[in-house]
Structures are given as structure tokens and as C-alpha cells.
Length: 319
Image (tube, helix red, strand yellow):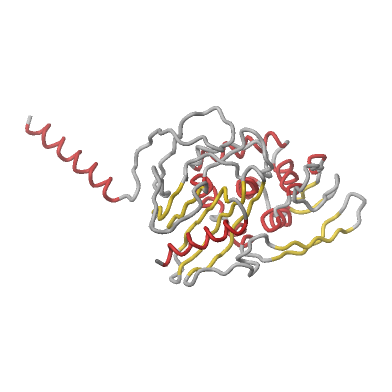
């Protein structure tokens, strides 16, 4: 009996120690969340996956800053693996072009930068207002070129070209996106396209975007690209002629159109905007000591509100 009691005491002590040493709970759980203004879906519960190298967040973590009530927001300290701020962070929302972070992640994992991509019929995007460089069937460029245009300019036709060349079809690539999301712990996301144009059953959460972006920045090429302010290149058209393309970053911080809070450096990120998703932005930033953070704001009502909320969020790094 004494032996059993001693063993039980040791187990309880070890469990309490584990809980105290981590900033987040080490248990999986399920909880309902708001469905207001969220895309349609069939799953009713949120099932996050704990990983020792990620921070998870169960509820809102607020401070004295005031952000838009409808926004989905998260700020994550990568070194401490600590969530500094969270608002509606587990709500399923439309990701718009933040989808392209997952597209790039899968392409970097399964493709080669010198791989030559050939545009097929999937590049013929007719949706009004969709960002594109007007690729034609038979156009060719390397994956390295395509990723730069994808992440800097957010071209939807380039996203489809990447997807259909890395996999045997768009459908297969989308399946790879969903498999990779589950593998890295973004278990509350579901993708039905590679570019982020609005579609039923295409959704993420702000937390899952952190998980996906965190996986993407492990690739030096990804981090290099999101830091670029502009990019120019040439590619081959179907008739053998050379086409020129020059693009500028859609990130207002990198373009110098928005002031970064004192003591914070924005390395880069990804923007996204659709009528359904609102205005979205995810960033990699560093404090004055070089410590890295990921900040994400989704569902802002306009660009002005997006950057106002993001700047307030970045201020939390130095406060």
C-alpha cells in the first residue's frame, strides 16, 4: 500500500510539474465556438492538436488595447511559445489570399525551386477583381519565380499553376494542402482551392494561420520572399516569346505606407482581401532584441481598420 501511495504521489507531482512548465495546456479538448458570419461547414466542434513546439490557446487573451469586435486576432511569441493576445482566435473564417501561405508551404515541401511549371487551363480565372498576371496556357516559369509572384503580388492564376504542376491535378494538390494542415496541427482548417478565392467549405482560423505560417517560415526561401518589396522577372510564353512581369508587395508596412511601431521590425507577411473574408494580414515581426513573433488579424472591415488593429497588436510586443 505504501509503495502504491508513493508511486501515485510521484505521478501527481510529475503531472503538476508538466502543467506548470508549459505556458499552454498539454491536453486536447473540444469546445463550441461562434458561428456568426463564419463560412458554412459540417463540423460542430474545435479539436486543436497539442504540439510541444507550438503554443495553443483555449480562450480569448485580452489586454487594455481595443480592437474591432468582429476581428479574429492572435499574437504569438515564437521563442517563449506563448500567446500574448487572442480574440476570436478559434473562429472559422474565410482566409482570402492567406490561403497562399499553405500553397507555398506545400510547394516548397514537395517541389524543387528550379522545377519548370507549365500553365494549363486552370490559369484562366474569370472572377471579377481577382488578382492575376494574365498567364496563358503554355506559359512557363520556374517554381522559384512563381513563388515570388504568388507571395509578393498574390496572383491567383500563378497559385493554380503551382498547384497543378506540383501535383497531378488541382484536386490532388488541394488534398495535399488538407493533409499537410492536419500534419502540422492546423486541424480546424479546410481548403478547397489553392488561391483563396471565396468558396463554400474553404476556411481557417486565426490560430491555424499562425500554425501554417510558423511552418512556412522554416523555409529560408519563404522568409526571403515575404521580405521583398518588389520583384521583376521574365518568363516564356507558349509561342516562345519572352514576357516581362514586375510586381510590388501588397504589404503596406513594407511599402512604407504604414508606420511600424517603435521597437518593432516587420520582416514580412501575407495580405488577403475578399468581400467574404474582409481584410486580412499575417506578419513575421521581431523586437529590438531580434526575438520573433507572428501576428495575425483577420476579418477587418477595411484596410484602415486592418492596419490600425495590427499596429496596436504589434505594440503589445514592446509594452
